[in-house]
Image (cartoon, rainbow, N blue to C red; front, side, top):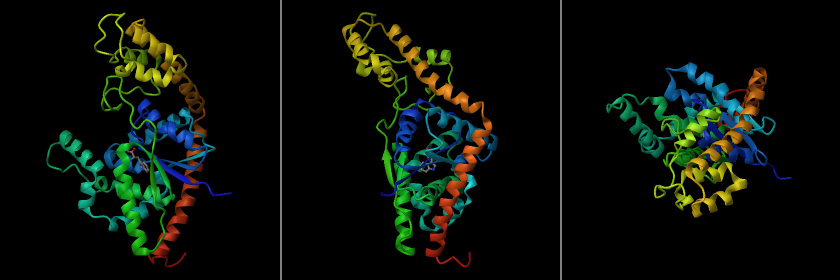
Length: 337
Ligand code: TRP
């Protein structure tokens, strides 16, 4: 029997998951956990690079995120969920990698560049807000991936420059110190980026267009009723083009059984947008209801969450220790056991 490949992915504990996370990433992880050795890292150290002055927020969201992941269908018996800061080998590895990457290369990383530009917009143009830790988080992410020997990294498109940075570090390490580390590959999900109901190319918390997995029925209904439809449709019985309508875009995700009818009725002008939105809100609430029901199961068992995180972290640490042994040997710093 061939050995299963290892998947490593990470997510920052900075807030609750929304549908963008679910359809853009987590749904893919749920499929992958069936086939691969799967590690999901709760990246609290990375979250702290942006939130070092708000440790309460990060701590609270470690649990919230774990609840969200389990509610979506991440199975604790199939995937290993662990807390980044509790695997100190990752921090150790980050230090060794920091010699293998130049400051100018980090500044040129497209993800970092975009994030620095956003910071300048928020905090002014003096660049003072960019810390050493923030600039270095791609190095730390390379350590996340390689410490666990992640061969495949399922991520969104915005993360590709970080995987490329990991490649470079791994290649440089292997060239200087000898073949030691696994070179990871990025795995993109089918839906790379979920559009917002407002027509925005992306759903995001900061964009104000997110539907959270924990949203209650009324909140969902309000958000859905505000969705953008075909702007050429003026009257209720005008025919319209579902392909330019955000309501239809979401029907495709949560109304799979009635999709054909919805599409036909819309094209023929037999479906008013208000009714169509009401139907979407209903289906979305059914969809979210199932997730929320699973969430409640775990919410009522907080000790189970503790145990999942603790056991997951123990397992991840074992793997990371193995990697560190090889790394130390390759770098000739394996003085004694
Ligand atoms: N940077 C990722 C994000 O912001 C989170 C992350 C941390 C990650 N470590 C990782 C993703 C390792 C993939 C692999 O979403």
